[in-house]
Every structure is written in C-alpha cells, then in structure tokens.
Amino acid sequence: MTKRKYLKKLKAALKGVPKREREELVAYYAELIDESYAHGKTEEEIFSKLDPPEAAAENYLRERPTLREEEEGGHVRNAAFDSEKFVLRILAVFASFNLAVLALASAAAGYFLATEGVFDFFFSFGLLVSGHAAIFFAQWGMAFVLFALAMLLVMLTVFLVKALVGMWRAVCGRPFDIKFMKKGTRCTLITSCAMLLGGALLFVSAFGALGFDYKNLAVTGDIIDHEQEISFSDALTLEADGLDITVKRSEDETCKLLYRDFPEKPITFAYADGKVTLNYPENAIGLMDDIGVLWRHGLLIEVLGGSTRDAVLLLPASFSGALTVKMDDGDVSIADMVYTDLVISVQFGTISLENITADTVSAETEYGDIIPENVEADTVNAETWYGDIRLHDVKAESVRTKTGSGDIALQNVTCTHATVSTRSGAATLENLSADDISLRADSGSVTGTISGSEEEYTITASVGTGSCNLHDRTGGSKKLEVQVSAGSVRVEFTG
Image (cartoon, rainbow, N blue to C red):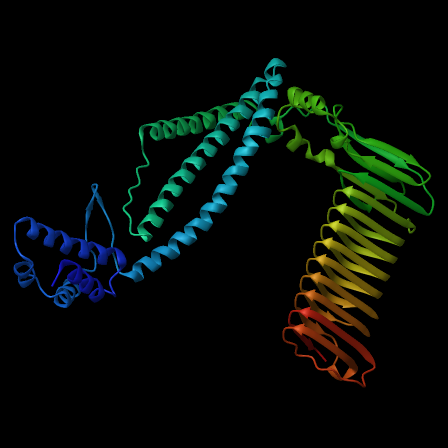
C-alpha cells in the first residue's frame, strides 16, 4: 500500500461527504502519513497501524457530528446539515430581494435630499431676512429630522448588506463575523440621533410659536381669490393645464369660474366666444422665479398653496347646452348637471362623472381612470390608454369602453349595445343588461354576471389560451360575443 493508493481509496469511500469535509479528512490522513515518514517509519509499518481506507471512512461517517466547530481565525463556522443550508439559501435570496427594494428607496430618498431638499431649504433663508423666523426654524427643524432619518436609513442598509454577505458566506461554508458598531459608525449614530432629537425640539418650539396651525408654516397671506363671470349661449369650452377642474351647479343663474393664485405664480385667464382658457404657470416660469417664491414664502408654500391648483366652474341650473373640457394635466370632476353633449379630454388625469344626464357623454384620458356613476345618456364613450374604467348605474342606448392597460368594470349598466375592450386587463360585469354585447380582451380574464337567461342569447365565444364556461349557441334574440386571446372566461346569467 502506498500513500497515493490509500488516499485515493479513502477519497472514494467518502463519496457522499461534502467536498470540503472530504478534502479536509484526506488532508488530515496525508499529513499523518507524512509525519510517519518523517519519523523514519516504513510504508508497511505506517499502513499496518492505520485503519483500512474503507474502515476509516465508515468510522468518520458514524461519528460525524451534526454540528461541528472549527477554529478559523477566531471565528466559528457552521457546518450543519444540507437541509439547514437550504433554508439559509432561501432566507438569503429573500433578504437579497428586500435589500434591493430598500436600496432603491434609499437611493431615491438620497437623490431627493441632495437635489430638491437641500436646494429648497437653502433658499428658504429669505424667511429669516423678511422677519418670519418662526417659519424658518420650523422648516429647518423638519429638515434636520428628515436628514437624520435618511442617515439612519443608510446605516440600516449598510448593516443589512453586511448581514446578507455573512449569510451568503455561511451558505458557501465560509466563516463570517458582523462587526457593525465601529468607532466611526457609533459617532454617526450618535450624531443622527442628536439631529433627530434636536430637529424635533426645534420644530415643536417653532411650530408652537405659530400656534400649532399648519397653515402658518408658510407665508400664504397674499393668496388671491378670483371670481370670473362668464356669459355664453348654448355651448361652453374650458381648456386648462396644471389644474384640477370641478364643474357643479351654481346657487343662482350666473355662470362663474372660481380659482386662487398668488402674485408670484398668477393663473392666466382668458375668455372669448364661449371658450375659457385657464393655465397654471408652473411650466411657464423659470428657475429664478421658483427661487424667489421659496425665498419669500418658504418651502411649504407649494404644499399649503395646493388650493391654487383647484378651479371650480359653476353653471346655472337652467343650463342644458354642450360642455367641452380639455386638459393637459389635471383631474376633472363633474356632478349634478344636464347637457346635450358632454365631452371631456384629458392627457394626464382622472375623470369623475356623477348624476349626469346628456345626449352624448364622451370621456377620454391617456393616463388616468374614468369613473362615471349614475349617468343617463344616449351614448356613453369611455376610453383610456393607461387606467381603469368603472361604470356604475349607467343607462344608455350605447355604451363603449376601451382601455389599453387597465381593468374595466360595469356594474348595473343597462343599454342596448355594450362594447368592452381591453388590451391588458380584466373585464368584470355585474348585472349587465344589454341586447348586443361584445367583450374583448387580449390579455386578461372576463368574469361576472349578465341579466337574463342564456337561452335569450346567440353566443360566440373564442378563447386562445385559457378556460371558458360559455359555449357557442344560436337561436337567441340577443347577441353575446366574447373574444379572449389569453385569459379565462367565467360569465353567468342571472335569469
């Protein structure tokens, strides 16, 4: 027997042992044989005293502990069963995902503080110059609190990174040790806690001097209320940008437009030939104008002056003409009115309609939801590219809904013709009553209930990938067509 043959047989006998343990045991016997050679022993003497390779492996496997400790640079390594390593791998993967989310949040918070936050707070020093010391100190107390929280968030992220690295090292069978509270780290932690406590005390003290009224956290005394009277005949068009528009019934027979602004950011108003133009100046002013507003009013002027983004159009109760609302950026809410034609077109914003009677209702938005409720019309058209459409208690001759990416829900909708079309989203029906129904979905499910019995409908159902509980049938006086490329169809009849 030679050293090479002995170690080869030993390694083969340890085939089921983890590679690291196998190599360590083989190395142990190799060192033992080398020491015997060094003491002048012959191969016959050496291998006669050693257990045969198979017996040595069998003894090791029998005595192999579940958890063994090894000294490696003062660290203790866990060499547990593979099942425990499997659990550790799962935890490490889960922790990695959550850490990635936390890192993105930390990066976003850091970017905001480094750009918007520092910039805005620096230029709010004008409050101190203009004698508004309490507002200045309240805002800077808030800044200290936010900065301290950001520092603590960064420290937590660093700690989790170190813990995660340790977990992965344990998975790989390597030693690890988390040394988090170093001297510099302790100083940073103490500084962050001091800033947090000091900023909170500064904010509470200054806020108390302002009467604990959040409206006093910025200089807003020069906000101006505007009331513009409008005269028109049978049609009115309202075009706006950067504002949220509410249309409702006035208490008298006058037509008015109500909005608010302040001198540094005046809202432009124009009216001619039945067309009202109202624009918020956010995109029209430059950097120096923004700095001037912050310098004179403080950081929170944009928050507390949020009412300057709201405009209200009051229409007389006797008005029953056509109304067109066109928006680039902003929400539209219309309630309790009667029209011949109601047309709303929005690029970025949500459209809400409630208690509306009209010949034609058309609501279109590229990015936003459309929510008609209690609407009665000959034709109702709702179309959005990115957003949901939710119709509730709608009566019409024709209802057409279409969305590119979003869900469509029809609840208690009564009509003659109903068209539902979505490229990526689900269609949900609840008590839909119609003579001619077309349901189309490229990627999404179609579920819900239709009023009436199945025998009343001639059904055509086509599903590319997915299940369908409808079957083609003829003989019905009503028509139901369902076409789904990828998704399931589960439609029930209530009759």
